Image (cartoon, rainbow, N blue to C red; front, side, top):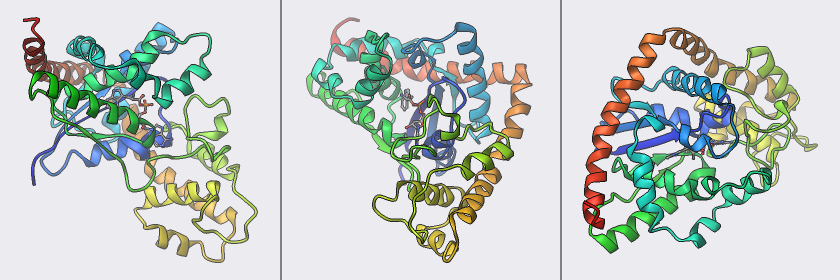
Length: 329
Ligand code: TYM
C-alpha cells in the first residue's frame, strides 16, 4: 500500500466535544498506522476569526495539544505543533488567496452560518479562513485529510485551489481528499438532534465535553431528546434515536445492525444508559492521560517545539517551490 501523507487540525476554542472526538480525533489516532505519515496541529490562527481572550486562547491552545496526545497522537511518530509556530502556513495562504475567487468563498456554508451567528464581527478572516485551511493542507503535500462532515466543503475547496494552481503554474501541489469516519462524521446535538453537536451551543446539555465527569455524561444522555416511536431503530427522520445509536456504534465498534439488535424490546432509558456507559468507557482513560500530560510542562513544550521544527522544514520546501513557480523568488 502507498504511504499516505495526512494533515489535520482543530481550533483551540473551548474543550472539544464528543463530536470532535468521534468525527475527527479518534480517526487521527487510527490513521497513524499503516506506514502513513501524519501532521497534526492546533489551529490557533483559525481561532482568531472569533473574539477570544488572549490569555484564555494561550491556555486553551496548550490544553488542546495535551488532549491530542491523550487521544493517542504519538508525537514521536507524528509531528504535533501549533499552527502559528510554523510561519509558512500564513505565507502560503496569501499566495493561494490570490488564486481563489470571492464567489467560491461566498459559497462556503460555514461562513454563512458563522456570519449569521457573529453578526457584529463578520471580519475578513472569517471569509478567507478556507484559504488558510487550504494552505495548512497543501504546504505538507497531504493527500488525505481526516475531518468531520462540516469541514468537507473546505477540503473540497483546497482540492480546487490545488488543481487550479497546478494548471496555471505547473505540477506543484498534491490534490487532497477528505477522509470521514464510517460512523459519526456528523454527531448531532443532544437537545437539538437536527443540528450538529457544537462546543459553542448555548445549552451545555446539548453537548458532551471531552472532559465532562462521568456523572455529567450520564445526566446529559438521560435528558437527550428522542421521539415517541415505540421501538428503537435507525430510520429516516428519527434524528435523536439515530444519533444515540451512531454514538453507540462509534464507541463500541459494533455495526448498526448489531446495535439495533442490542436494544430489541428495550425502552429509551436503557438505550441512554448504555450509550452513556460506552462514552464514559471511551473518554475516561483519555481524561486521565490528559491531566498527566498537561502537568508535565517541560515534556509538552519539548513536543511542540520539535513538532514545529519538523513541520517547518517540510513546509519551507513547498513554499520555496511555490514562490519560484509564481515568480517571486
Ligand atoms: P473544528 O475545530 O471546528 O473541529 C475539529 C474537527 O472536528 C470535527 N467536528 C465534528 N465531527 C462530527 N460531528 C460533529 N458534531 C463535529 N464537530 C466538529 C470537524 O469536522 C473537524 O474535523 N477548520 C477546522 C480546523 C482546521 C483544519 C485545517 C482541519 C484548520 N486547518 C486543515 C483539517 C485540515 C475546524 O475549525 O475544525
